[in-house]
Length: 281
Image (cartoon, rainbow, N blue to C red):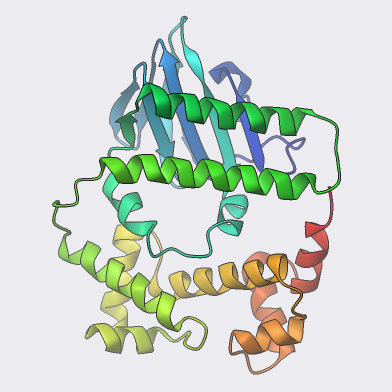
C-alpha cells in the first residue's frame, strides 16, 4: 500500500533522524516517494522487494518510487538520517532523463553503496540545511529555496552513485533499447508524441517497444513520452515568463485548450493553477 507524506510537509520533502519518526509508513509498504538513507553508526536491515538488505556504518541507500519495503529495523545504536522526497517534487527538478536512467537501472537491484567520510560529511551538511529550512519560520521564496536544496541533494547523490558505476559493465539488449529510446525522446519530445515515431526509429514494433520498457522501467513508451513532455511543461511554467499559449506552441500542441486538457489529465491540475501554486509558501 502507498502512503503519503505527513500533511505538515506540504513542500514535498521530509527529514528524519530515527526510523520511529517515519510514522506514516506501515510495513509492508510500496514506496510512493524517493527515500534516501545514510547510516553513520549501527545498522538498518530491511527486505527490499524480495531481498534482505543491510546498511552498515558509512553506507548510503537510495530507493525510487515503486520498491516494496518490509521488516525494516534499526539497531539501538543507529545514527544517521532519512530524507523523503515526493515524486512530484523530484520530477520538478529533473527536466532531463538522459543521464539519470543508466544509473537508476544499474543500482535498481542493489541500491546500497559505501561512501567515504568526505561524502558522508557533504550529505550531513545538506541534511542539516534541509532541516533548518523545514523547521524555520516561513519566509518569501521558501519553496524555491527548498527546491534548490533538493537539487543539490539529488545531483550530489547521483554523482556518488555515478562514481561507483563500472563503466565497462555491458548493458543488456533491453537496457540498450531503453537508453536509445530516452536519447530519442530528448531529441524529439517537443515535436513528436507518437509511439510509432520512436518505434520506427528503433526498428521495432510499438507493441514490442512498450512491452520491453514496461518490463524494465515500469513505464510504457507512451507513459515515458507523456512524462517527459509534462516535465518540460512544468519547467517552463516554473522558470520562464512564457504564457500558456507560448508554452503550448513550444511543445507543439495545436492550441492552448488541447495543451491545458493534456496537462490537467496527467497532473490533475491546470497549467494556470500549477503556476499559481508555485508562488505559495
